[in-house]
Amino acid sequence: MARRILLSALLLLLLPAFTLGAEWEIDKAHSSVGFNVRHLVIAKVNGQFSDFTGSFVFDTDSLEAGMVEMTVMVASVDTDDEKRDEHLRSPDFFDAATFPEMTFKSKKVHDVSGDSFKITGDLTIRDVTRETTFGCTFNGVVKDPWGNTKAGFSATAKINRQDFNVKWNKALDTGGVLVGDEVTINLELELGVKK
Image (tube, rainbow, N blue to C red):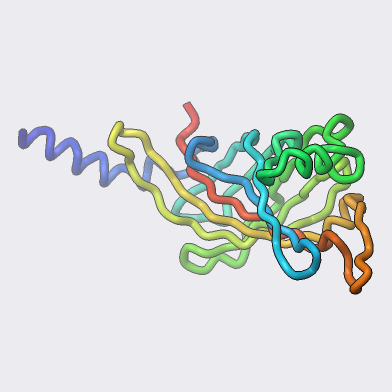
């Protein structure tokens, strides 16, 4: 019993060192890639993508050394309305048949303050690439009940969909447009050490 307690304590002490510079991958079952956008000026519609992958390298003691690459399959868009989702997959919006992926590749991690930081990189949608900055929070590293090392991050960014040639819209008789241009991207990511 004492040996088991000693081993557990040793693992906890080694956890920070184990995570230094480690390669991580997304645990999809416990992660989400979501967005929201204005509808009819007066409300917001929420959506998410169910098919995504990502690789991460980071040092818990030096987040500035981190690197991120993510790929999202746009055909997996889900706004809880099949007719709307089909429209989003069409050439009016994502044109999923022609441009099946959107990607993000980090260029730098900066403005680190405690567990908060920013990641700037290249976001590509419909083969248009724009530099985009995500505001991020590092939520910590833990061991799950099965002995797996897990890390958590939250991230958000705002983009103008017009910048990525996602231009479809309809004017409203009362003024304004059917779909807003500003899109908020929200990521909740649980990562596991890549095996």
